[in-house]
Image (cartoon, rainbow, N blue to C red; front, side, top):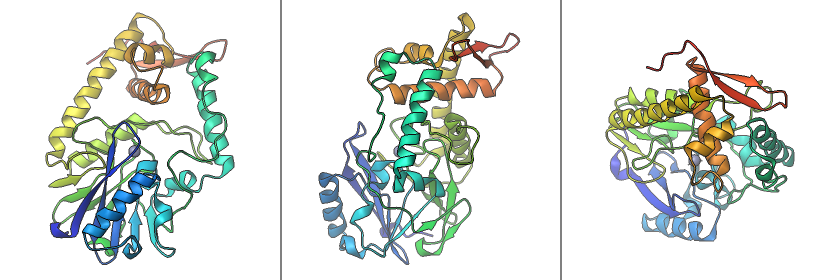
Length: 326
Ligand SMILES: [Zn+2]
């Protein structure tokens, strides 16, 4: 049970299209902050004054829990006291420690991936080759790893749910006896959350399939008796089941559209991306390509389409002849 007067929502400005992120100061056995905001002076100022208005100082925060590794949720980790506990899923680690070898691998992976999925060299040339740090992030890692099923005594015994899709590091926190949950970017009230591509980590043979993971995570939370889901952006959601149905329906409609395209002719992921997002694909290539590949994974998984490799090494998607589209 989490008394609602112990949950304090603070909305911070972030330099992204979403404009703001919500973080939550929760007065549990440990004073806990769920997510941090980006590593920018404006965000820090608003976080400081938000925490102060609740009667605390940043130094009073004893524990930070990350819903996932994206910089709007983890970027400010460096501002907390030295012995603060930092909890999150194992898969946050490479994105937080940011060893140069990982950053190089990450960039290289996306360049190779873009080529394989048919992105013309004109675009590939513009992709970042080497970076020293992920923008708006910081280099401070977890002190404790949490995973599916853990119960956090330090925070009203909330249960950790592993909810990958938007990020492979994504978790939600769920209080079983009153149905209160913190969902990060799993489900947002006004917009669909994007399933984002990530490279496989060490020891993994295949890349994660973000949209498939994302749908599973959504279906899972839809089945829980959640009474209030605090979200990473926008207002809390009370009708989780209803909103999940809307999101899944929209996604099925988009997949249907993609299947129609591929039934007309075999296409590369980039070609599908151009048709799905004609106005924004150039400006937001990695985001729109992620979304497109997600849809293609989904259709491939259902057996509607298959992947073939052309002689030049580029992957094309073809419709399976006996597939039915309902
Ligand atoms: Zn995110």
